[in-house]
Image (cartoon, rainbow, N blue to C red; front, side, top):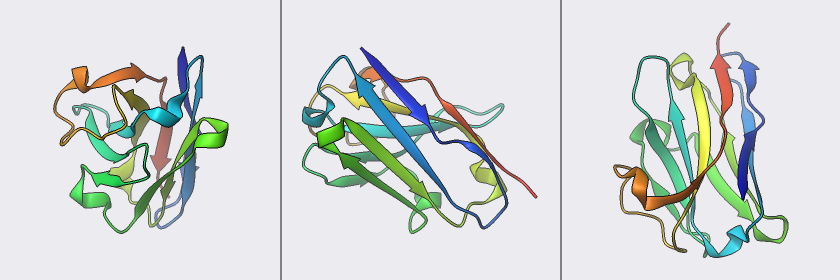
Amino acid sequence: VQLQASGGGLVQPGGSLLLSCSASGFTSSYLSIGWFRQAPGKEREGVLCISSGNIATDYLDSVKGRFIISRDNTNNKAYLQMSSLKPEDTAIYYCAAGWSGACPRDDRQSSDWRYWGQGTLVTVSS
């Protein structure tokens, strides 16, 4: 069982990146997928979640209108499209799969997430 986030890199402020989350060893289409991030010296925070029925749940006000979550159940993948990036978006981004198809109401409990993936580093800097 594995989740792998990819697509990170260095981008200038105002730029865009598309992160991918690939699942292997299990069928992710029945589970919610969440994106999280952890900036240097800060706690991990939830960003967005998408249910098995493609309903998005916001966990972070600061990315509203800039980040979009989506999924491709055929290919066992989920995505985080990030636009209008700011230096404060710099972090390691992780994806996680929930225990059911519904997104947890909030991002407070790590135990709400069944599988965690390796992260991908996003650096927003000029």
